[in-house]
Length: 409
Image (cartoon, rainbow, N blue to C red; front, side, top):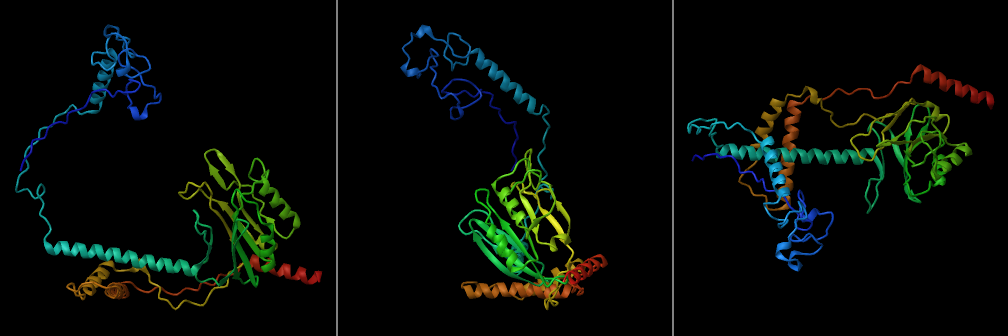
């Protein structure tokens, strides 16, 4: 079949509001909402107008005609404006078109046969299944490597601490007190027996629960506390202080918790900058922090900047994981695809999946097929020693502190 293409007809009729009778908007977006009579220009509907028929007055051009008339000078101006816009943004070139050759494969590509469609459908199903398997694995990894305090029944996420799998740690505190959300873990280290790392969130409408800081210090007096406290201090990244900032000053005066001397703003929105996120800790642990930096917000609209720092204390690693670790950079993906296709051909495509047991069996088959192809095409990674080395500077600092403690005793 062949069709003759014609240029589309452009609508050049001006848009007129039937309430105020002005142009370039419709009644839905009329700002005045005041009905104007099209006959006399007064504030009433035309069916309520009592003016004589020879006393017509256009509210736009003041001529002796209805305001909706096509003879109105204002209407003609708007109509000409629409013509100009259409001409400005429409192509003046009118290329000639020829009917496509019926035997041209580029014009009329072949439709895929039934086998190709089935293969594409199978591949799409396989891709979806791979995504589901990987997603479930990632969820399991996240569950195993994080401590979290989620908000229940409210918007937002709460607080969370994520720890690398090879680091020994345990959760020691997880609660919400006076709207302060707290999560804390203890990490085994080489310099100290263990340290406590806590994350706290204080909403803008709440006060800081200072007892929380004492509780964390009592659990482990080697502690690092980070979080969005919504506390501002004058001359510490903020133009003025607030009530939570004054609470923070009271905490510093007690002496067991200190703040890092850094006035870099951690919150930025439009032209407003302020320090709301804090790195606190006890001594001597706080003195081991270094490379404290803020970074641009990561694609979020909240305005908070990520805060990073290092602690040179050497975390105690866990024993080597018995799980297999694959080197995906060295994978032979063509071999993976070939082996996977072979495995998937073992499934009986005539079998119907009518029950939950059938679906679970099919899911296991897909998973096992992926594992077989992976083991054949993706080599295992070499196990590396994840135990961090202690620098000579850190050793000298530790030795000096031990000697000073002995002499004071």
